[in-house]
Image (tube, rainbow, N blue to C red; front, top):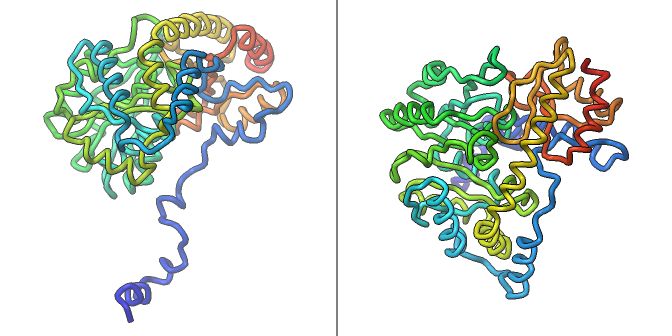
Length: 400
């Protein structure tokens, strides 16, 4: 009997019957998809459920992809991305954060989602704990669960002044000797909360002293309404700090379907992320990487126009929802979401299903973002103002 056969014979009966790891069998479905899947393409539905700009990718980026295809950039590349793109991202980051940034600290990924997964694969072992600010996009914490870790969510608090507040002491108290990382998404999906620079400094200092990672989901860092951009951990992190910053081309350059993102990390982690890219996908799509160079080098004006559009949409949605008697909406300072409470609503998934069936407006249920999100709905205002106005007209009778 071979060693493998002997191990199989000795395995508990339950393990023999199991098809998948318990962590995978226990993964929850996306409750955003639970609303969207059966209603995508349905006539008359206004889809505001996904975190996706309705603005197509600009032509100058599309044409860069066409040129890359015509130049036969269709073969495998380096695991961490083509050097010209890594250099372009490093230069972009240096300008954005006013700090030197070498390409050795950049790994290109096949989307921001892939960057989140790679990060959990790199740092989370079974039994480890990750503390996260919530409510939070479920995919962030589920990658921890895939790796056999657990998450502790510390929820933001809605303030009387119409914003969101983080209790930093509560966040730190949630950490213990099994905590390997604190995860922060700012600007936040779904709340639009923006973490202040002072809070970031205090958290980084605390984590640095304890050898805990800061995992910073900063895909919305350019989409801030009251400052040129949101504060970033990369503004203050030293090159060898345990900071992993996640970014993506999806939101700022309207490239959701292109699946291109990147990680900024200590240079010493580069080899590990190269291996993880190899074993997950080998390398991001080649001609898309070439288009990414053009997005970074020529896309600032496009981003500025998006931010101005989202600012106007934010003001429209805050004004209209704020006038509805059952609605309580903290004002979002970044990203493109309104995350609002509805008096008397206890089942956000059921209520979202009613709204899409009866009003023809697709929203994301707050429960999709964890227990801290229940009682709320998320509306994406990355849409035309006329579309938002029609959606709000339909919602008013049910929320007033």
